[in-house]
Image 1: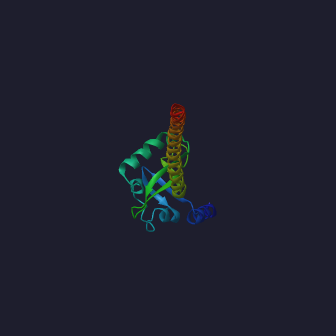
Image 2: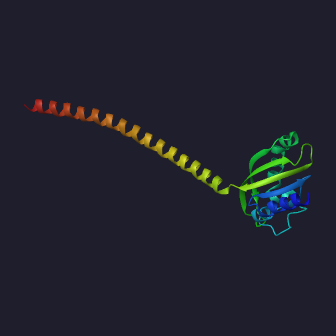
Image 3: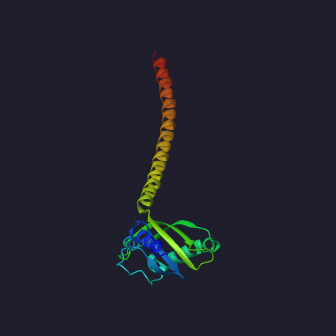
Length: 171
């Protein structure tokens, strides 16, 4: 048993994945990767409410509401939320959360920073919106030019008939 606990401790301390054990929204334990991800000093998160991980209280409440029922059922929750580092810098993380054991009030959370993916997604959305605007502008321009071309063709042919008529009258 002692060997198994020692191995578990080594895994917890060395894994690059941020891990926290939470009970009643209070962080009971977390690993160094969790402290690094949130920009916290060693041991600073233990005993804190999970509220400190979120930029605003409303974000924290929304995250609880979104995941509470699934966790209570014993399901694993996989969601992306926006968090805040100790410095106030915001970032996005994929969160996996699950009861440590069925019916347990302790919940194991893992956090993976997905800020780069979120930034890329936002850039792609902006690029698509810009492409849509450009396409709409091009379509509008071509429709206008086509209409003007048809108008000018009618004018050109009218001008031609008038010129011919004037030529014939001069004879």
